[in-house]
Length: 282
Ligand SMILES: Cc1ncc(C[n+]2csc(CCOP(=O)(O)OP(=O)(O)O)c2C)c(N)n1
Ligand SMILES: [Mg+2]
Image (cartoon, rainbow, N blue to C red; front, top):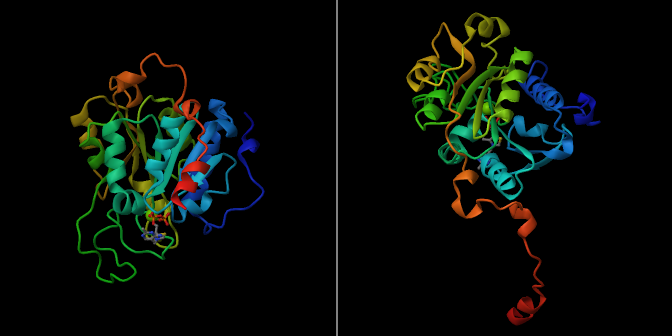
């Protein structure tokens, strides 16, 4: 599939140097190389700078409320599993407004790919602290830094016995594209944390800053090993397919009453004429 197929006429409005350009390009490259057409792809977008890309890629999409990209993606996929389904959201949406959805998506092992744009702040609302912001960093409304502790996305996800966790970096387009491809191919809930450059609200983390810390790591199926690999220190941020367990059944495959049924749920929806019910309510 030609990559041009996923392009739209409108140009994105992100700041120069924003990692969202890289994430969109990596997603298009991954879909193109996997030969998945725009009309077979569904992306649930969130609110934020990431979500402002909702109409900047030619796929089926839905932009929901803040923190709700994951349940939208889950619903779309359970209704029609022939689509390749993504949830695309920011660190704020994922760890604050919608953290419950991340937890349930992992424990349910829905067969979707979750792209978490981790720019370490609530960017669209001009740089408030999130659970991934460096604790000492002065942020909008919190000049002395945030009072709360951090959340490491990898540690959280690995504590839930996931089937796939990866971490990519927007400065490594090819690496990110390869990770997204593996996430799509994996049967189960693929959580991909993307370390995202944000030159406007996180200018300290320059490409040089990331360059010194980003280190690639081999995939493991040993959870303890993966747990040590997701730890972020001042010297290292490990990227790659960090953990994969191909033995866990997906949510749909665990539903006994759907066994051997060839139709999709969307094919089974009946049309009802509600006119008479509405009349009764008059
Ligand atoms: C329920 C709810 N809370 C807060 C907001 C305000 N809001 C809009 S965008 C945004 C920041 C989004 O941050 P993040 O999810 O990290 O995405 P980014 O802009 O960094 O890509 C916030 C707090 C909202 N729209 N809805
Ligand atoms: Mg953010």
